[in-house]
Length: 99
Length: 205
Image 1 (cartoon, rainbow over the protein chains, first blue to last red):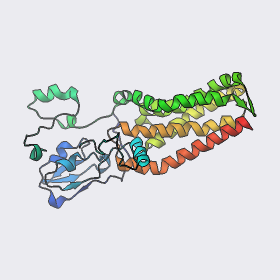
Image 2: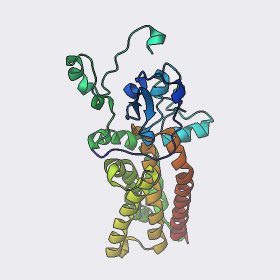
Image 3: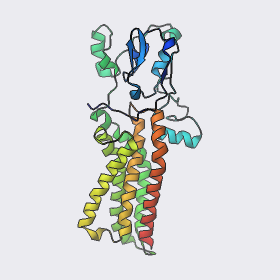
Image 4: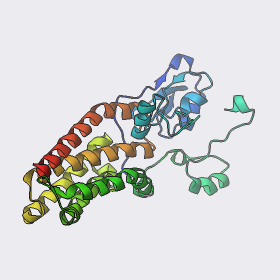
């Protein structure tokens, strides 16, 4: 299968390595292999594969990862724009797939 | 998660079909099991969703098309509405199917990262095919302006619908969608409006 790729250089993902304890949770939960462990610490290796689902940030026990999560969906963005709410999939729907 | 719930957590495969292997293998998911994929079958099963979501707007639009097709040069004819209506509805369906069916199917093969660009390119190919038909059957399109209007309308529709497919994929991000919409939405509206203006001008004047 051709590896699906989306627009580069836009993700809001950030990792504060100084807080990382190297537990490897982020590498475990990321569905796109964005993280790896190098010399016992997490490192972002596939930044542009990030879809901002927020699984890493939710599962990082040290709070070393932050990302503005939301659904990558044009319809949701239009809907959010029209209803003056955060982009979401329906009434009362959360803005993240992993919450 | 384990801190909040008190349970220990085993992170399994993302696809249910990998579960037997996961359970047989000491509850350890291989990296492959933890990766989401988006192959042609996975894309194809989502197409009906797109068809239904957009269909809510396409059916009234097609009916309006039949009605509007009855007008020509300030007169209205039911016969014309039916005859020309079919041609126009088929073209409208071209934009609809281009964005909601064709683009998702051939997604990785179309150049570009932005879905709006992929949809516009697919739409442009369909519009080129339509030019070919037009060239062979000039009688189908009495007005050049009307014929040309579809070169704007089809790519605009296809681009918009393909952009909405971002919501169906497991790899598009909110930041990315916002970025592409900022550029694409004004262009889609401009192309659609230009095409519509040409279509109306060609039929009524």
